[in-house]
Length: 360
Image (cartoon, helix red, strand yellow):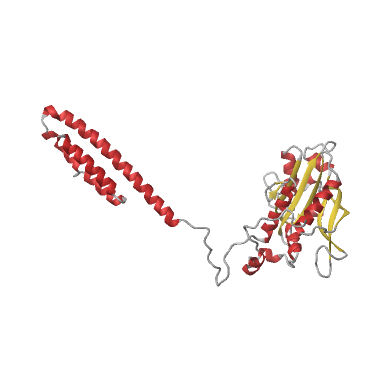
C-alpha cells in the first residue's frame, strides 16, 4: 500500500516544481491538502483499512502529510521571493539615466545652490587645516547668544529692532533667534576640553532687509583654542583661507584694529580690490571682508576655560557676502527667491568637488 504514497509524493513534487507562480502553487496545495485533496482522501479512507494495518498506515500518512506540507511551504516562499525580486527589478530606478528635462525645455541635471557650494568650499578649506564642523540650534537663550560672549545689556544688538525675540518661557526669559553662530562656539567650549578647532556654518537672524541684507542669512565662524595661540596664527590662517577661497594666490590682505565685545584685541580684515571695476586682488582699494580677534579672557572664563593656560582666536563672516564677492553677484535677494533661471545660471555641478588649493 506504500506504492500509492510514493506516487503521491512524486507527483506532488513534480507539480510543485512546475508551478511557475503563486496561483499554480495554490492549485497544487488545494489538490493535495484541500478538503477534496488526494492526501485528505487517503486520510479519510483510514477507516476502510483492516485494523491490523491501520496503525502503520496512519503513521505513514501523517509522515507524508508533514513532508508535503513542508515542501509546499518551501515552494511558496521560493515563489514569493522570486516575485519580489522580479518586482524590484522592474521598479528599480537607474540613476545613471539622464533626468527629465525642465519644462518647457533645457537640461534637467540638478545643481548645487551657491550657498551650499560655498559652505562645501569653506568646509573643505578649513578641514584641510584641521578644523571640524560644529552645529547648534537656531533658537538660543539670551545668555548663550549675548551674555556668555561678553555682550553687555546695553549693547544695540540686544534691542528689539535688531533681534528677533520669542515669547518668554515659564522662567520669564525670552529666547532669541540667534543673531550669529557664536553661541555654538560657547556651546563647544562648555562641552569640550581644549584644544578646540571648529568652524560653525549656519543660519542667523537679524531684523534687516534690503539689497545687501536679509532677515535670515548664513554665517560661518571659526574658533581655535590651544596653548600659545597668537595673532600670528590668526593672520596666517585667514590669509591662507582667503587666497584659497577667492582663487588669488597673491590676494592683498590687510588687518586693522577694531572692536568686538567677544575678542580682545579685535581686527577687521580687508582684501584688495578695484572699486571701479569690482575686480578682486587688483587696484589700490580695500574691501572689508570679515571680523576677527583673540578670544576675550572673559568669554573663556564664562565657558569654564582658564585664560592663563589657554588662548584662542575667532573669526566670522557672512556666507552670502563672500559668495557674492567671489561670483560678482550684485544683489542678495535672488538667493531666496527660487527663480529657476537664476538658480540654473549659478548652480554648480554636484559631482565636482571643491578645490583646496584653487588660489595657489
